Length: 121
Image 1 (cartoon, one colour):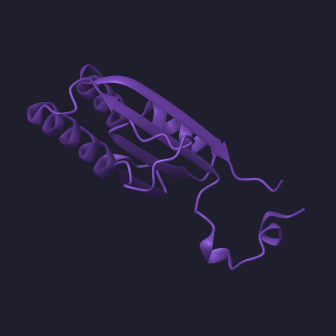
Image 2 (cartoon, rainbow, N blue to C red):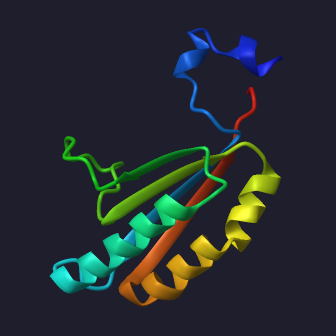
């Protein structure tokens, strides 16, 4: 089954990128304004300087209805899409990503990454 024939809706609705890199971050001190500013400056610098992400989303937990299956205890969600495994690997090794980790790692207590690959099921 070809990807473009798999979906029963307009291709424009499909997220651009074959690799979806979803990162959820919990800060050590989510109420500390200085920590928030440091973290947000670091992540905005990463977003501005990464050369390999095709599409980018930076968000905070939505105020949707509380349900047992909803995880909303994180402070930030970063989603990048990549065109290939090679681009994702280059991102992992690029200076912008390494600098972000060096600056921001001390500010978070937990990070979860979910990578998925676009393919028909």
